[in-house]
Amino acid sequence: MKNNYQLDFSSDKQLEVLISNKENEKKFLTNQEDVIKFLECHEKKNGVVSSREISYFTSNQGKVKELQGMISGNTSLSNLSKERISIVVSGSPIDVEEDQDTYIGNAIKKANAYSSLTDNPILVEDSGFHVPDFGKHSPDVFSARYSSLYRGELVNFISNHNHVLQFYNNSLDKKTKCLINKLCLIMNGIMLGFEGQTVKAQFITLATIKSHNSIFYGSGVLNGLIKIPYLQEFNNPDWLSKHYDETGYNSLFLLVERNRIRRYSNLTAYERSGVNNNHRSMAYCEAISRFLVSAASENMK
Image (cartoon, rainbow, N blue to C red):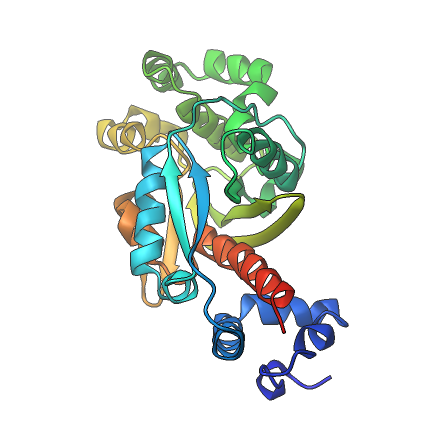
């Protein structure tokens, strides 16, 4: 098969060629230049389709700011969505329990729940934190409920290391599972022999757009590092405050960019959204690409 740049995007047969090979289809959908070129050719030939509203439900203001930053500051997502879609952000009036064993399972469950609230296509995502060296102990799809898997181990860990108790008690005072999840990650890192070491880590996002009975998905991975702290760092007020202020895994995640390393929690939501390989923007771009390409193919004359 010809590569994407040799395809005749003005031909009605180009999608038939693309989907004949799933590997090539994947490459096409993740190459924003190709997708935009295809959409522009289609729009020139068949007319511009009016902007489509896509609904996004969340009560997490951090995600709202990050999404706004992506649309305005991330070149790929901005160019793809400009004049083609508008994302309507609403607070989530329902609480959907993320109890599935896969990212796609959680995303589809949320999309199905939100579909009762609007007739618009729905954009949802499920994210996780992956530490390859942790093996089966990596948080992954269980990232938001990680601590629930290690209740007994955490009690034993705290009882054997009294200086960790302050971190745990402050986590309870803040009434957030995120800090306890982070403590579980540190605990497993120490128990697995990585105390004081730096290991690879990834943020993973699976995004879906549900439109009627169709699901369009996209995935994204942000590579970085985490340093498992030494136990004595729990006695360091500066270290503790740094990790209290950022409740997710962000304060442990180190983003490697060219010749510098930045702690992810030091970036604003807007700065995170502008990272070229941001996991959410990658996932959103691919899901939106699938949605727009499918819609265009249905309207071909």
